[in-house]
Length: 321
Image (cartoon, rainbow, N blue to C red; front, side, top):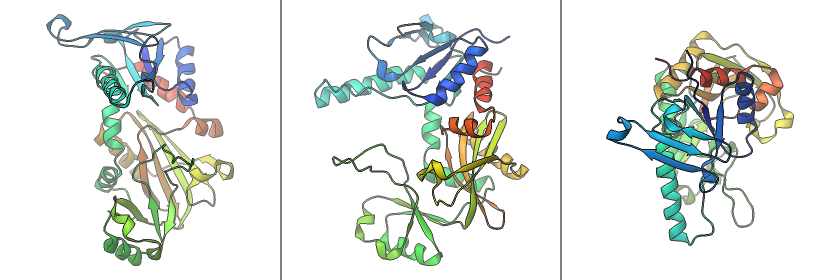
C-alpha cells in the first residue's frame, strides 16, 4: 500500500514545471507540501531531532503557513528549483553566516529524510552537474562523444582547434550572474577560432569541443523507467538561443542509445534527468550533455507527451522496498 505521507516539492515561487506535476498529484489525491528555502523564517519553520530519541533517524516537522509536515512521514522529495536566502538586511559577514546555517541546517535535514524517495537527491544532482564527469561517464557507457578539450593552456587549446575543422566553446557551468551594466556573464554555445584567443584563457579552464555537423537536436527526458525523446529542428547551433525558431516531434531512440542513457543516470544514482544529443548528417546520435534537473514543461505542451504524469507516478510511488 502506498504511504499516505505527502510529497515535498522544494522550489521557487514561480515554477511552471513544478506546477504541472503538483496539478497531476492533486488530481490523484496525493498530499503535497510546497516550499522554498528562501521562505526560512516566519514562512518556513524547521525542527529536527537526531539521536537515541529519534531511533537513529530524522524526526521533527516542517511548518509552512498552510501545512505542518512530519519529516519522517515525507514519502518523496521533488527537488526542483530551490532558492536560498541571502539576508540582504544583514551586514556581509552576518549574511554569509546566516546563509550557511540555512544551507547546512535546513538543507542538511532535507538531504537526510529517512523514508523519502528523492527526485533527485540534491547531492547527487550536484555531482552529476560536473561536465568533465558527465563526459567520462558517457564514454564509459558507450555513447558517442565529440572530441572535447577542457583546458586553460593556450598552446594546447590552439593545437586542439587546429586538429578539428570547426570547434565550439561551451561554459562549464551556467551562471545567472550579470555585470553592473546588465550584461549577462553566461554564454550560449559559440564557434571559436585560434586567432580569437590570447593569454586571458589561462585564468580558468574552458570547454572546447569539435562541432558536430548536425541536422537536428534531441532532448531526452528520462523519468524512472519512462523515456521521452523529442527531436528539435532548427538552423541554430544552440537551440536555446531562440525558441521561436524551433519545431518538435517525438523521436524513437535506438535501443542501444536508450539503454546507455539509462545506465548513465543509474551510475549517478539519479531517478530522472534530461539529456541533450544531436543527429549528424549520417543519422548518428552524438551525446552532448546531461542536465540532472532540466526543464521539460514546454516539451509536454508542444508534443503532448505525458511527462508530468510520469513524474507524478514516481513521486506518488515513494521509495521502493
